[in-house]
Image (cartoon, rainbow, N blue to C red):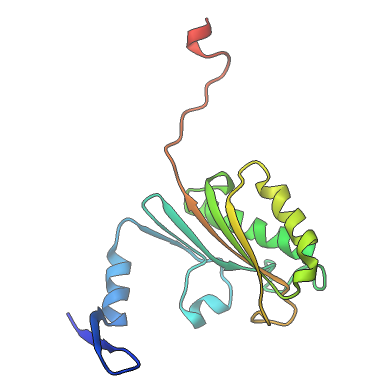
Length: 172
């Protein structure tokens, strides 16, 4: 296996790392890794997946209000952009066997923090009962000037209990 030696800013050696080719090969043959691509033009250029699930853990990359044709939905409207970004996250979670109820953390990046109430209201409409941890941070810009909101999500998929119809057996 090819290894490279990382050096700190002061030239000291740190732990060896696998080359990116070795890391890609391992990821490609890892049966526990499930990847989902939304078809975004940025995914192959930057080299990332919209969502990755390894075991019970799911990580969803920064997701924006990109519509099916690759155009930004809700230009100038942070509330609508938040709604669309969260719908895109829901689609990614579903594709890897998870759902919004499994989300334990979100990170919200915004270009104008003064719009926090609109963004927070849209987030609360989706996660009001789930109540994941979250952060909302203003950034100077996102990858496109039309984008006002970008959201990351992390989920933990727990064992699912089969849903029963009627009353529980203990009350019969």
